[in-house]
Length: 185
Image 1 (cartoon, rainbow, N blue to C red):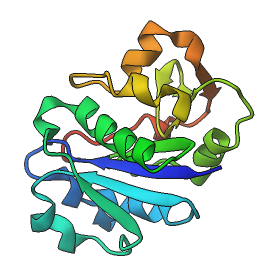
Image 2 (cartoon, rainbow, N blue to C red):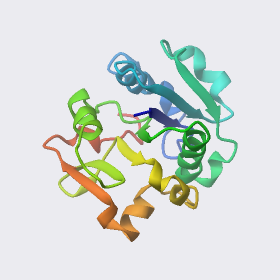
Image 3 (tube, helix red, strand yellow):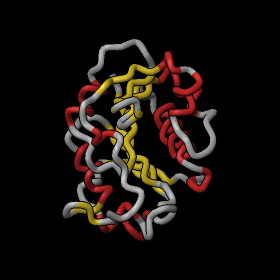
């Protein structure tokens, strides 16, 4: 099975004063936490960024094994980044795409593995904490074309709301998979 791990890092950081990806969280830039987590896995990796990447890329290390793709429509919201990643997955014949956000530093390896190794026929697998969807989200290739129809500032949740039967909800006991940083701590 060919899996693509994706970090969406093309957002505007509207509620954050400055670029939150370089914000120092517990000793390293916020985005570095997710880069480090994905580097523990053998699958191919993709980083979806915006036009400001060249200004901040020197803040990060160990991402040379990531393919960098620019989302030129990032101002249209997160759906544009999801579609950029899924178009890449479709063009390169990936069976599944595992999507992470660049502002969620506390996702555990245990959660990732629960999502990756869940035995299900459902095309979406996601962690849930007290009813709230978290990350990462695993998407099967059978849904890639549906994802390409998304728009606005919501991602896969659009599909989940319309067709909840498509998602395998993995209940987790830790809130880290739903914790993102939108303002400086």
